[in-house]
Amino acid sequence: MERKRNIIIAALVMVGIWELAAFLLNTMALPNPRAVVSHALQMVSDGSIIDDLLISCTRAVCGILLALLTAVPLGLFIGAEPQWRRRLSPYIYLLYPIPHVVLLPLIIILFGIGNFSKIFLIALIIFFQIIVTTRDAAKSVHQNYYYAMQTLGATRLQIYRHVIFPSALPKIMTAMRISIGTAVAILFFAESFATTRGLGYIIMDSWGRADYIALYSGIFFMALLGFFLYLLLDIAERRICRWTVVH
Image 1: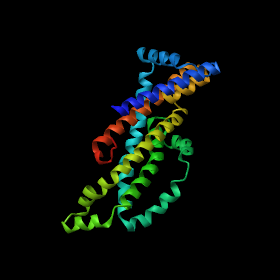
Image 2: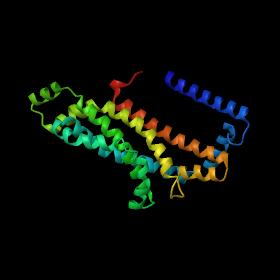
Image 3: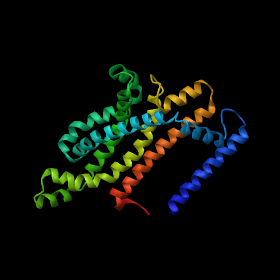
Image 4: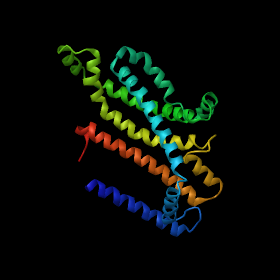
């Protein structure tokens, strides 16, 4: 209860700062929050934002899931198998620092301007965030846990299931927290090019028309999408990693 109250207080403080800044600057480029919220609610009531919000949500969620389903198993395998870690880690070392966002033109050329190119870009970028964290988490599992399971006759798959994955899970969830913010940011970038649907397009289109209230409404919905995804992850973490949650 106290946590929820603190979040509400923080939100009210941020809105108050926004209101004060809009009053002091007195510029069209920074409308007050009341006008933005009113316009956002109007967009919801007339349905003009619903399709774009669902499209952006689908792209973000699919990108996150694609990265998660590929990076976690591979990260666990690389971290838990020393011989494969020595072979594959150099590739991660070389590929991780590359600013993958610059590959968007090539991805569009290869996969077209549809949803898959945007989903693939999101997945590609957060894939490396998740795999590095997962690999290091699996690598840090003490060998004594392996020996104990082997003494009990556990197979390698059972060791992965009952030792390696549970041990790495808290750090995987932490990587997911970081990845959600990254995914929403990349979603905006991906929807700024070669598309006519999505929240990113609405923001850029409003900017081009100097419709600042619509611009901030688009930003509001983009922030709401990120908050919603973060909230879902927070709920999931509290259910599956209860031993790490600080009450």
